Length: 322
Image: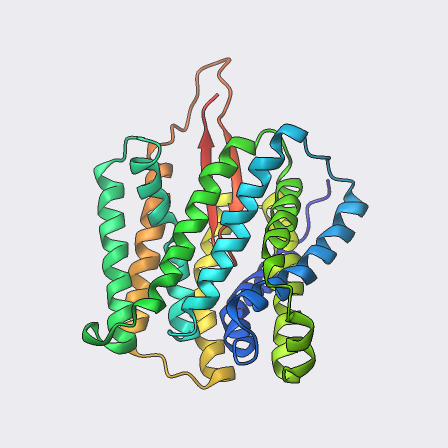
């Protein structure tokens, strides 16, 4: 495969950052006319159609019958629960704060690994979790003050937990299906579950403002579909550790977009909390590099790595035991 030029890779990466940074902006605009459930369904109906076109061109694998229940579970955590809770929570926090809180997924992944899978968690990772959660508190403090927290806004943290569970389950299927195949079936199964919000959706679309309908269309086409494909293209040509660094730009870009397009005033405390959260997430990934041995014994094979996108922003690197 011909290696693309650095300029092309930079442009593709920049487009991914812009798409995922737009996501909380689009959600904020669409929620003026759509309910959280209708917004999630409208967005992923569009994404499902686009993914169907990609699947036909790429000729993805058919799922095994025994895997269908688990693919529905992936759709539940990765699409249904994640986007319902993030849409609901964003009614009570700014788009800038939402972009930061959604980055806490790796912190919850550590907690899921310890409490759910009984995996050993190092002191370094526990320190990163505590640091990240303190950053979350600073973001909340910067939004409303600790004495005026609207607990409904914390639903975004439930969205992050949902994605952590999604990646834990996805790890089991990373060897059975290609990343594109897994993403397609996750999007389709999640959209199927969201169809409980179908009654009344056509009326909402016809009565909504042009701005809200365009926001839903853009959310479905770019952050929910095309950005995934662009990111997969980047990962084919760039190491995961290098590519993931670029995604730390998503919250700052989202803050700038929120200030420009929505007129949000981002406080210094929210910025500080965002830096703390991103630092903790970056520190978790650094531990894996420090522990990785540069040399391997003759005949030993490198561990497989499953890469997945965290919601509309971020990357996970999961090592799989042979």
